[in-house]
Length: 266
Image (cartoon, rainbow, N blue to C red; front, side, top):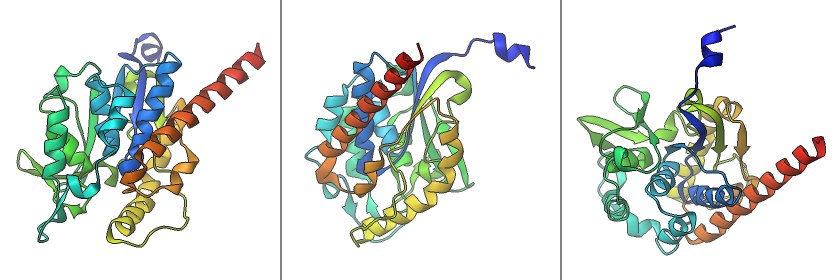
């Protein structure tokens, strides 16, 4: 038995890990709303791709409802621009400018809640965690889906979507938290889908991501994984409010059932 671990106080009481998932990541905002209503607020957040976007905005002081509103009337085409292929079919400049305008904090250190963002180092083929310095570049890097988007260059290194190697960043905060709540916005459901370049690419990546989230799901003290999320495509941008509400309802019901179970044990 390692007595040092028993008597060592962990830096954070509650950690929140937010998965990737494109527009499905708006369910994270709904989850946050339900957690707030239950009196639960994370002391640290870890995010990948869309999870890094919601995590950053929440850590920057925006409410869950405000986050949902930001993305209600924004289409994929408004945030990206097609280009002659040069590392990716779409430029992500517009998304970067959009996030730069919204974020009041310009560095990790300015955030009200500590944040860790996961991206993939394309040059070395390894997962990288950003937690200090400039905030916007790691967010863009974590959202840069390979082939669709041009890799984000940070200090001479090419980065792509963190979900390539770690789509559910529970392990990045597990050792530092007493409890970890994990939200997986991309449960794998092999149902019908719309055939398009975007959806085929997103579906293929989702299948790949399944293998790298299994271990992290087991590390959660509370796993929130709305099954109905499988009914939405990664780029269903016109259904953002529905997705937000699904995250909210699923979490409220889960917390109520957990509470009922605890009361029954008394």
